[in-house]
Length: 299
Image (cartoon, rainbow, N blue to C red):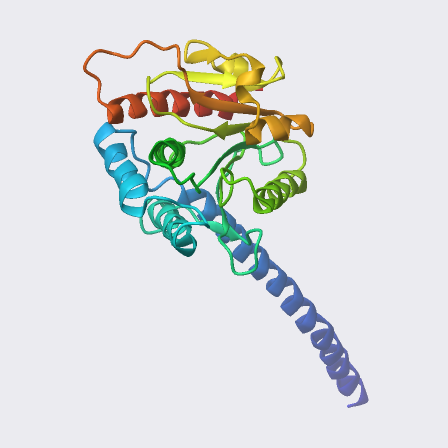
């Protein structure tokens, strides 16, 4: 009898030790499985809604941003244009349209306009990311609004075009709320963007997208002749003198030691006879997308 009680107590001890251990292991496996599934789901997310660059679609987007929304400046109507532009970018690239998860980071002012970012994961997650950036604000004059809008529309179209790609390196598309106004807010926004890059370590290259209206061609300006973007630009565009980038975010980032280049329309490119402005913008955007794809897989 005593022996049976002893055996029973041993089994009780074994069960008391085993059950918590099993719960701990199964719980850990469950959590690991959940985060793994979430990670895989994020990777699949960008493969659902890729679209090609098209002149009619870009013309429609350009009209919405440059004409319907109009001036995007804190000095105009309390900055309502900035609010509407941020909502438009988030809507067109978000889960219900392109399928990206749009991250929002606080802007330079409390309750101000956010920095928007979308990520395309790379097969080599530790590879230095390619950063693509523009500002979604604008000057107040008609030409300034149109030039600034072309950069944002081209970035949106590029993000849509590569949504189904499988890049080697991570791609980061970032839309800044300030970039064209001469104010302290611009400096603060840029400082936060620089910190964002620093938090991920070394950048492969940083493309600052400027005005892409006019010719259908591309031009890069950088103080670093070894920047990967300059090599990848071969047959897609031309390299401008460095001073052409002066005063831009790219120039300021480069002066702080980052691998930044300025991407704009090539002013020397001959314009195709009879080409409409939306067709030229689509042509330059198509070349921009090809440049991004070359940088996705290059060293």
